[in-house]
Image (cartoon, rainbow, N blue to C red; front, side):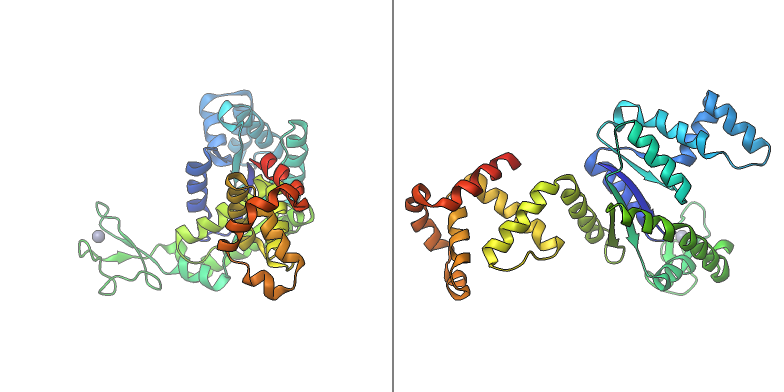
Length: 309
Ligand SMILES: [Zn+2]
């Protein structure tokens, strides 16, 4: 899965990225890390990067893209990667697309972790850290406050507020992010690659949604078929993304184990809605074996289901 991750400071995309790395065994590619590594290893690109930095200039997109390309050629990136922090603007996104096209590895997904600005402000400005370096506990006065204000629950030391977490600094950072990212969101949306996940709730809830999006992106055929199956079973138009995915798994499992289940699901759909609802599983089990031989829908349903596996 080849992913670009988009999200504001405080959106929690870093946490989601870590979970993605674990689950899908793909590396995260951070341009900051690549730059440091290339400079330290004194590679050709590293030398050019260092020259630019020494001259107080920004490292050119060519150099950064070259580093990304070298990184993507490594074996661990064969099954995909997560790009975080790059691209930051449209020219970079276009150059990245061109490079990935040459490599025959186009991006599959631009995942935006979306959090309201108000919540981001609270997450970032509400941070308090224990001043005792050996403890280092972290609090948030809005979301996870200490029991007594300004005091660490664990060691009793005073809590400190980082100067770059003050309201105006944070506000500026978020504005810069918004200005940079909004065009990228449109860019990937136009390509049909943008998916958005709400970055609120528990880390696990968010990751569940992220995983659902990725599963659907990885198996677009299965997703389309499950939508069709769900629609047929309910006699209604395909529902939204999440239910579809669950239906997909259920349908796939049914199709794999009991091919006979399919025609039953399809038949009621053709009948009035009341009957469709009334057709329970018990009936399906009894009726199914007989019908498999003559029922036409089965021919359509079963082979597709097998391909999917
Ligand atoms: Zn402490």
